[in-house]
Length: 146
Image 1: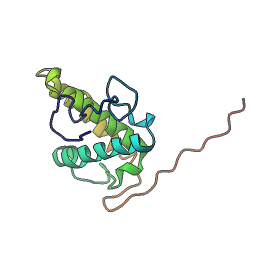
Image 2: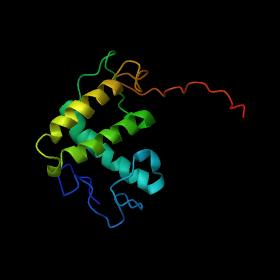
Image 3: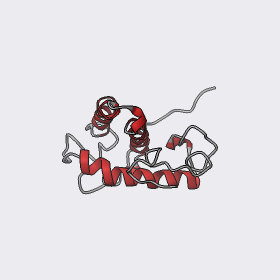
């Protein structure tokens, strides 16, 4: 399997004969929150390549208190889920089969809304600073009475 940033007929998802990540899906890769073990690691390797080699060099704006980013973004499961969804949409909408407006749709409907959510001062990187990561505290929960 490849994780290249260039189209190979499936935007970086070479057919491994097993449905994407090696799972049983025939319709492409599974959403990262459904994966574990080696499948999760393969997905994270591809996502990291995409984030570091395409997303951040092209769209990564300066980090500030009003627009945080965590250098260890993979430690924030919310960010992993959102970035993976963004990557899946990028693969689909930048494929030549998406037509001439696919990339514009990706920018308008996926990239900017998601980047605003990720980089919001109250978003998943709220406690992080340019120089470091701070684990996010989970909201408290009470036991279910039932």
